[in-house]
Length: 235
Image (cartoon, rainbow, N blue to C red):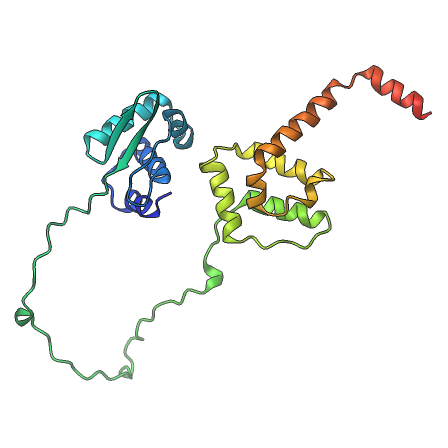
């Protein structure tokens, strides 16, 4: 992921169409810091941008016509894109002659306002507690279930938050499926002691998914006759 390219796309790119902007952001998320080397498939771009594949094709053509991306087709493989990060159209900077600058003389300032005058304006202070933290529902769920299992509540670090974001945006995991898998692994006697952080959960995601699907299939194969025989044996 190129933070520089993402910053340019969000703050400086001239794109106004929402689909085109989302497609551009997805390309930036896959690009190197110089904007090159992004090669997500059209299907992946469509999934991450919440758009149809035909809509993605139209957006890519529009971005190419605008000169904001360059494409390098590869037969049988995804096209490689380069983000063309153009600077804002402000014109070239001109040198300034220092002798042409006029500096007004400094005037003494009385810090005490006159009697009966208005109070001077003061900038409101921004306390750290007033900053609204970004929501990380999967991290919060995993931390809550770890506490319910009798362990100390883990700290949700930047690494946890990044792992949740990449799980959804880069890995393309459905959020509802991820939530169900967190609940399953924290209810499993073996996995609850091994999945104690969001980065570990992301790394073991496919292994957890396959194991949970295997357990579900085994449970579905149990017939009423099996249950009756087990009850009879217990009696």
